[in-house]
Length: 420
Image (cartoon, rainbow, N blue to C red; front, side):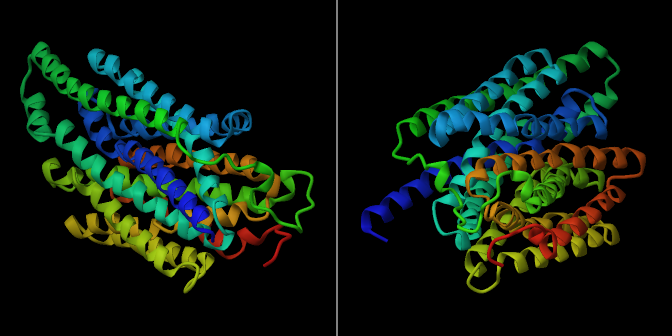
């Protein structure tokens, strides 16, 4: 690779890595927001998981419009627009906190998700296109390290603000019978969220401006994922894409359950939230370890297809481990799911987009729609948690992994006309 091209390639990867860091930071705050808003707005388990529903359902709503927007704006302007929409969503948290209004909090989360949908619809294929297809999983793994490192730092920083002394506050709410005193305590707790989300909004606006004036190239979509054998006239002639979107649905569902339920699960097991508030970061720490393994192993030592199968088996084993163990051992099984999940997105994404040619942006939008799994599956988990208990509710993960195994072994080849 020519020196100038190498520098341009490295610069582009760095800037895109910054974007992955930002939306990792935003996405993985939900694990902290669930127990925080559960107390502030006095919710049950099912209601609290509307946090993830509002955030991730926006991907389903915005995925296809995002593809249209990117066709009009190009990748670079689309990224800036996505960041600005995310900033707007962060600012909505201010009136939500002042009014202690759960639907308004959900509106802010939904708006953040709309911005992230635009951003991810642009960024994920961008990383795939920047280099050879066979090393796409490695590049996405590098981006995943940036994403999940932010996911580790975000909950630690924000949880230290939002969840400080929350066990004592919950006990006080149960012991104090004066409704006015309880309301005043909850309002004071709600106001904790204003400062960090104001900082987040300002940071997103600054990054949007930096991306707009950056040297990131706008890649011609006619050159995306070229395949000389691709003579199809419709995206419907690529059924493996839609099977991949379903795999993304179940993958994001189990990833969000593991990362966003673990604090509440630890509390359910009797572990103080002062300790449990770091569990989401522990899960993401395992994911970062998995991404490093992915960078080292794929595709030179293990193919991305084989790695996906291995990770799926590990997910099933750990899910059974959650159900058969107690205390910190069970929590550790949930956290270690981060290792199983690390390679799933980097493998499913290129396996689903291969050979799409000019349909790559549209295909990317369908995969982004699959992120709605992060909206639906945690709600099912929360409903099962209220009906049975938060441990038994993890049973919902096993059929998800079984489908991902189907895609890893058979589904990604269904209807594929390119080179095997």
